[in-house]
Image (tube, rainbow, N blue to C red; front, side):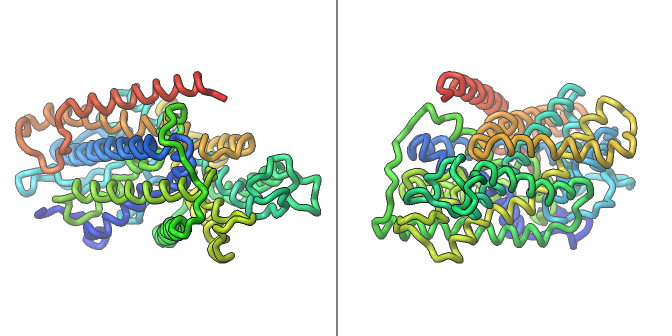
Amino acid sequence: MAGDSLTDPGSSYSPAVGFFFIFNLIVGTGALTLPKAFSQAGYVLGTIVLSIIGFMSYISATFVLESMSNANAILRIKKFDTSVGKDEETESSRGERESSPEIISDHEPLIDTRELLPEDSTVFQIRKRIELGQMAGMFYRRIGIYLFYACMVIYLFGDLAIYATAVPKSLRDIACTFVNGSSVFNMTEDDPCWATAENLSRRNAYRIFVAVFACTLGPFLFFNVQKTKYLQIVTSATRWVALIMMIILAIIWIAEGKNEGHPVVADLTAFPNIFGTAVYAFMCHHSLPGVVTPIRHKSRVYGLIFGDYFSALCLYLLLALTGVFLYKQPKDLYTLNFFDVGDKSQIAPDVIRYFLALFPVFTLSSTFPIVGITLRNNIRTLFGLFTKKDFPWMIEKFAFPLITLIPPICIALLTDEVQILVGITGSYAGCGIQYVIPAMMVYCSRKMVLRLIPDTAGTKLPYRSPFHHFFWIVLINMWAFASIVVITVNHIIYRK
């Protein structure tokens, strides 16, 4: 699209690179919990739910992009008062910038001081990176801004709790070598970790690893993380190798007749777990502005994002379906299945076993400080909305980092059930971020565009969502509301 580029050509990249970045943004920790969720819900129900949620997630992603386009137009046409948005840029968005490719200078102002005029008969080109928090400040009323940040904070707390649980659990299962039976995974939490240390149970070993994790990575939350692009590239490559390796090993062992899984077709009582896990697996909306904005040619951006979602869905189905047919009981962290030291025939070489078992340790540990700083900045912004004053130095440097770190670590000390944490985080806060926030944001942005730029009424805007009819906004909100109700009722009725 003519003129569709960033101010700094060196900070942009091609649609092919954008495809990779968005795909990497979608595929994350949630993939490792899908096999167990499929095993509980059934492979047919799991496939249906995952496919529907993938489609709904794509719709809401198009809403985010249209909102970005509308925000760019409003900032160009009118000197919009973005006092809340500027606060978000200096605090919350800085953390989000660090969690995505470094593509725009940290010193770039939110609004160009030069007069911005329409180019190519439109001002709707996505040239300025505008984060969700900034758009919430532009489009929502005050209560909507409060709810937005509250939802973001709850989701990020859940994210950190998942990381603080998954890493120590992986380390515990690798380190604890005592086997009472045919498999290390038949151990109970009260069994000893090592034969030579009968007083140290697996539960206490896990808690020790949680404490080590907190002491090792917690201090990063008191500072700002910079220059993370190359670390993310290495992490992405590791994730790709691990996922492909697990799929290939599972296919080979199933073809050799070594499979032990006999999953059910469908079990509605497990709907909350598969729903929450699937929502978490497709979560990327809060980071889309930082990845989409630098793409040079965005004329086919919706097709590009659809390709990302379809590719992620195919990868998820391959991983989950091979996992449930290979293993009788997939672990909540699927990588740990490949580390089993029993007498099964599905035993990979040691280098592969340790690589897969340690894969969550390296990837999640490298992401924990980035997500933690993002959460810290969102907490500060949320409190700032109430106080309207600068915080004392002690509050800035110590209180906010401690508020960020302590709750996830406490949750990790209380439970090591990664899938439960993923299910709850995805089912509630994830539902808000993935469905409600994008739907309401595009609705409010459209109203503001019609008020400030009335000439656009009835015209085809360049980044209007393919699902531009009001019906889709209603459908997304109804889907979110109905899902939360069903999940809550199921938790109450079938709670064990």
